[in-house]
Length: 130
Image (tube, rainbow, N blue to C red):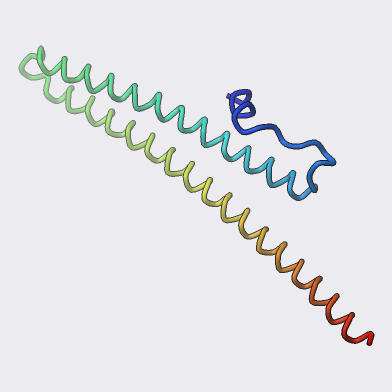
């Protein structure tokens, strides 16, 4: 998965090609993206398992004997819980991705504010030295 990700999105630049802060951003963004890609692949596999289980349950219902209803109901409830667990995993991955994006945006805002403060002090220094 990592090799495929790198071939599609490229590797992190060399040490002197980007600032250390930008390299950390790229590394964090890549790590979050890879984690969510893995979670998505696992969820897709889980969905396939659930669909196979549903098909199997339909086949069991077709040939079930009287009195087997409680067992089929229990099996359906287990399948429902498994489906909900997969959905919770996907929601957690989405929340982690959103938290990473917010943190990334927040650092960019702080960097812009620091740069603006630096420009402000340069302008103030230039105006007061005259």
